[in-house]
Amino acid sequence: MKIDGFSRRSFLQHLGATGAMAISASNASAMGVGAIEGQATNRPLSAAQKAQAATRAQRMAWWHEAKFGMFIHWGLYSVLGQHEWALEVEGVPIAQYELMAKHFQPKPNAARDWAKLAKRAGQKYMVMTTKHHEGFCHWDTKLTDYCAPKQGPGRDLVREYVDAARAEGLRVGFYYSLMDWHHPDGARCKTDEEARKSFVAYTHGLIRELMTNYGKIDVLWYDVDWPLTAEQWESERMNQMVFELQPEIIVNNRNGLPGDFSTPEQHIEASEAGRAWEACMTLNDSWGFNRGDDSWKSTKTVVSNLATCAQGGGNYLLNIGPKPDGSVPSETVEILETVGKWLDSNGKSIYGTERGTFSWNSNANYTRRGNTLYILQNYWPGETPAAAWLTYYQPGTVVAIGGLKAKVKSARLLKTGQNVPFVQDELSLRLTSLPAKAPDSPSTVIEVECEGEPIVDHDSIRPLWQRQKVGIS
Ligand code: GLC
Image 1: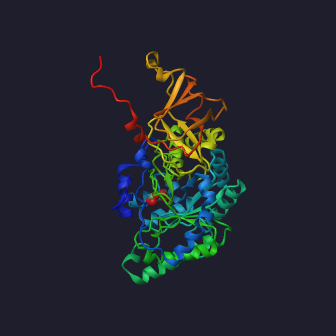
Image 2: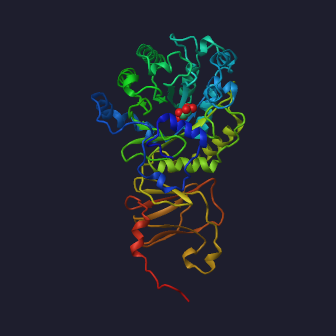
Image 3: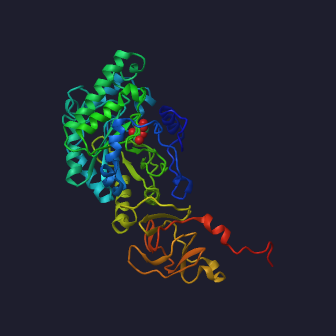
């Protein structure tokens, strides 16, 4: 789903109305040059943005290598268990909603379980909601009493989270919603200049605390900039403060500025070459805990989404919505653990891979590192009955790719290391003598060493086909 021409807000409403939809791994157009989520990237860069651009490659190196992160949506809305937009969608009076702050009483150090789970899942970084649209702050802030230490939890949940992530060697990210449904100036700042000034001072002050009190932070993940423009948020000054306090940090593009990376949401769409991007996605249809939402993605979908991101040079930020006590729904644990087991033996096909140029394949994803091609076969061909007549599909099970524009040197099954015989001509590569049953699940990876960059381009073979007469007898 592209959002050019949509305002951020109408995009969110649209999402809510249609439900979340991920473009499947087999959608080749997903990997084309696409819309950049929300923000004006065409404006000339300011001096500060140029300075940030100069250090970008170095600041982002770990993130490009990482490919896979855990998003965590957790807040008062988790107590309600009806999606994190319930406050607005259901029109809950603020005074009623506030009662949940007292009843939000998570178990101590719940974040340790998340961090351990992320580690088992093969995720390399975490991004937790420090303040969502509901306005409740998870940390020890001096700027409002509407915060975890002064309400039900009675302690700093950001501190617990940061410590937990670091204990597992994971990079630490903070999600921060600029839009605030609770603060008295959160909406009137649009039309009242005094309210804007005080709300912007509050916002910058909260971000300053987050950037000052928790040591080195790796990612700042802004969200929803309604109702102000970048100028009104004073986003340039906001980012400058962030970079002064955290010179190594990376920031996203949701405070009205391009930042370091784009953030396609609930769909996968590569930015133009050279621009970093991260697709964020729910594991069911909700970010916050939603007890009725049983729309869990399959492990096959998660793995192929991760591969789709990797093949376009992007990252995959996959969400969990812990329950109010901090425990993680069992379905979430099961899916992430299965993905992690797959990554244990197939991580080479994901981590540290580079953006490639690949035509669409309905049965497989492709990734690459240098001249090595990884074929992630999501749907194993098995033995086709047509092999009885078509030598092309012999011997054994054959995985074939049309239009691979690099000479193959060797091929092997990544999981077992077993060599795979192959035949290659100008039209295709055929990997032969493969087992009838898929050697791995949910996707079997074949590692193919090539002599040059493994570009897959169907168009290149069309003129080469020996075409036959019309009508056959
Ligand atoms: C949207 C939603 C929000 C969620 C976010 C994650 O902006 O409003 O609930 O936190 O997407 O990308």
